[in-house]
Image (cartoon, rainbow, N blue to C red):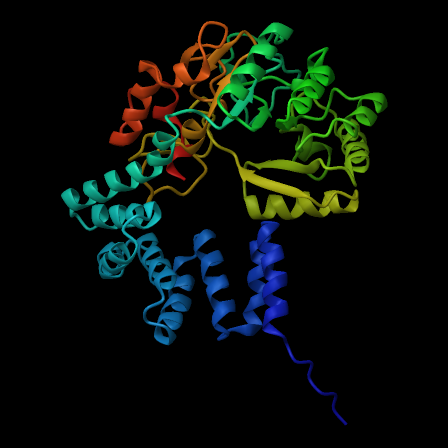
Length: 433
């Protein structure tokens, strides 16, 4: 007598697929959903992932099937339009996007996609209008805040002990300097005056845990009520320092790590030792378990990001570390020549940006960076040499600095869709998605 087939519950499978998606395991999530081909919610989820993975022809099939069932489903129409644009069929996407723009006139995402499609269809004036609208919609929340930042990136240490291949260290003019206590107190006071709640300890360059008073500074910021997060390469630790981490009350700690053996790790994190990194990684993971601190590995993928992610995650799972977030390496504001030089946009990138257009940088809009000497930069991520200096926190308040002429000039470049004359921004691949 044959056994009865186990009934597949779509809701349970969809929930597991969502978990895999959140863990960036898109190929696994797609494979899980494929046996439920024809289930609308599963098809919708799969179509979106296929589009992210640059498989637009497959996503088109699913979005068309879904629209046959629900012709007025806006998100499916937008998804189909995105699939068509990604295949170079922008003209076919225009009727879908015309309806979407009418249905959601205040959607920056829809206006942006419509602008791209119109551009690729040769309707340049209409494209310019939609892209301008999209840029203004993205900028509007910052203007409603009076341009005051709501997050801050703080460089406690300019010094770094590694030479990682995905980092722009080759252009550093200096590799020394720690933030003094009086500068940090000023950072705290100005951040509070602006209503800033989130403080990221990393800006431009430097390993924060090289600062001799790092723990005291972190304790001070947490005591003042900030949600404090920090990114570290994981090398400057002792058992005593790791034990102290567990008592800090940080919001998050990201351990920068990628690889699955000594060659794969040490070829990226040049100057670090694989075995020592694993000892520290496992100890920090164990120490922060059960605390309020969200601990995760931040892995930068330089090649096949899905395959690199799979290998890195499998190795880390064998070490008891399961929270891993992988990003494609960016070009560090144009200071790293990774991937290929994109002919149209004139930026080096590992990303697929053929069907992308420049948009306002969201980190530029929401945050500033403060370097160890008090220099305030418009870019808290990559501006190691302060090419985007907009002031000094020891001389002006953050709100005044952000409303100053220098920051506004960069803002207007983003509003116009042309930052070619802005250092770093003009060669950065981040604003292209």
